[in-house]
Image 1 (tube, rainbow, N blue to C red):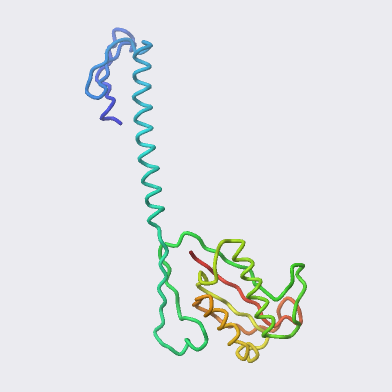
Image 2: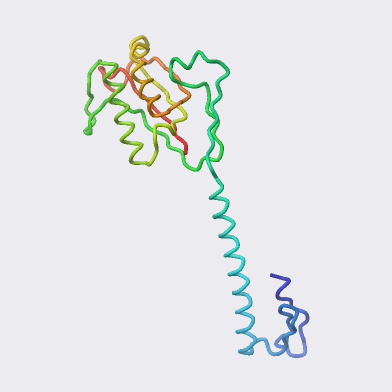
Length: 199
């Protein structure tokens, strides 16, 4: 803005009231409290601010539009393919992330469903997760990590084909961790899943 508005000198004999300006290279002289000078100066400043503001907004929107998410699956080996997960997901350019709480097999009132049944609890967890994702405008394919907590590792492994089928159908390829625990929120709850999603 200094290139548009330049104060060139102050006439001290008038106690600072007389001042000369150069606006766009054109001199403006007279009393600084002159109505014409004030209007002209204010309009020039306003136009500069508007120009800078509009330019800044366009630049921000353009950057936001270019921010496209890319996901790269990293699998140094192939043995994990049969278990329906990947070793790592590299995410670049993602704009939104979602971190879920531990999702369990419960109804809309928080009551446990399918006591002690690993397969049915997994199936209910997937349904509950899809409800959460629908409310937040995410999809299962946006999942980048799953953490499985179970009170029975062997039963979970035996039920895993059901889970893998759900994930494959949704083109969901998460990096996963399986953790054995002594107990969950209810004595008959055998599995809990947390998820991280990016889009």
